[in-house]
Length: 205
Image (tube, rainbow, N blue to C red):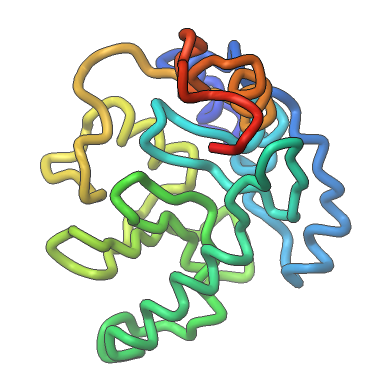
């Protein structure tokens, strides 16, 4: 299954209706991170962009972005958080990898950090690493790319959830691009659902 097919499969269960092309300067991103990115992540950014899944997880952009209300979560900040977790958990004794091989691409509402373990020179072979906050193990590696991992997570295909919260309860799956979420907030609506929200408005989230 190609990377684009994986993203299309994900779109079958989580429509990109409220997604948007992130229009990433990939050369700048590759220069900043000193690596290419997996093809499924590039395809995901082109179809969905950075944003929120059901308000339970955020997919991070590879470059800093400025928002009209607040800046979205950043890959650099969450990568440093994941690497710091590696250090405080015992370093190689906890996860036999260099901290530079940990690159975050998402976070969950349960404070898990979704990463790649970038040990292979081919980014399309990077497995997913979950740095868990309320999981059985602080580090768990899954032999899937980012899009396939999300598909399996959103399809409830894991016997034991890889993240420390109920990610999906069998209901509707929704993705909302971060810019759309901020526009909804400015309009007095819930960023995730679009419903009227008396607490939404001009003073920030």
